[in-house]
Length: 110
Image (cartoon, rainbow, N blue to C red; front, side, top):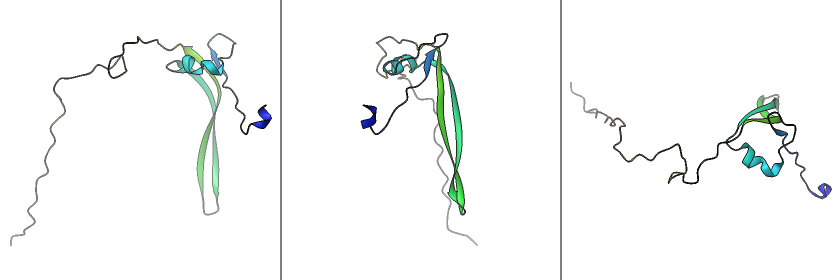
């Protein structure tokens, strides 16, 4: 079946700390979103170009992901802005007033 597909994917090597079981791809979002993880990766630099000039292009390949701390579960009533940690503020603005530029008189006097 994989022979008929154009691309072949390789699942991430993602684990929970202290366990040898790989996290299945169907659980990536619930296990990784918001979690504290340790990631090992390889960073590669490729010089691309000809004699007139070369540019460095970087790529990273993830080796493995270890979940150190599971994501926090937030209550369903998050408020209007969607985040439990951000409170909506309806008070006055404390930003400083904008300064106006002084107009320079373009007429020259002798």
